[in-house]
Length: 385
Image (cartoon, rainbow, N blue to C red; front, side, top):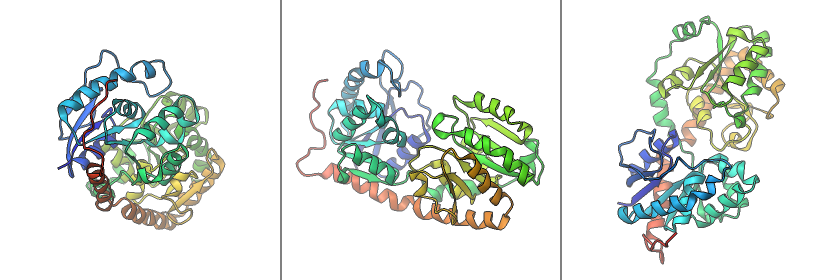
């Protein structure tokens, strides 16, 4: 069995998903500098010692001053664990992985790290360094593949597959019985109200303001439309202020951050899904909504176009165009048959593309190829940092 050292912050749903799936096909140990890992998995979690806080993900002098120290501690534990493959996740852990000199090094890249920051120095140099040192690169969309190629990565090094399991997701969603009347009453709404749900984080890249700006027209013309914002983030306070300025009152509701079960309950009891993101690879939020048979209205960006065929299984609108967004939402809010047709088509897309049985075989093949590659030992000597 291949032994994998999974090196990450261990705090996201993607970490939990990937670690769980990797453990089904290999032996996995988690290495992290996070003193309080937030994921719950059935594999060993080793917290590496570090005399200061986590490496910041954005521009800061500490992003340079701590890298060699992190790589040093990583080297020490890799000598003890003797894994066959090191998986380094994201830019910060990927940089330490690349500096450690360990091979084979499998870089798992998050979408934003190749789609947005590389336009800025020094992030472009950092991500190019990680891509150059990696033996293999995993992304979840073709738009990220193209971004990696533009950053100088060889095409044969990049593996693209969605990090979702729509069959498992469908099973979880079906396990939550819809309660249209009770759910709406809990929010202070009527049983006949139509809910437009947005489950994106409240960060600039997700452009939640555009959804709020579309709401007055939708509520005015659809009558019974209500907007539900599930999640939170640094812009939550400002978004609530904007909702007040727009006079939306009790016709919008902010849940704050919620557990997965509550998120799924919100999806199961909503009627439309909306996302105004400015950048995305494969959006887990979008796939969750599609698996829940929700018709989706999302921004016309490359990552979304890989999942949404405009007019068939959802609608695309120009990013930041709240007027066009409101028009599409009104069309669907007033046409139940169109909502049902689009929701069913979206579900079929989700199930066909999010088939983890197929996707996992590709990942396993990549892991086996790394381990068996001729002329490359499984555990190269680690240079001193």
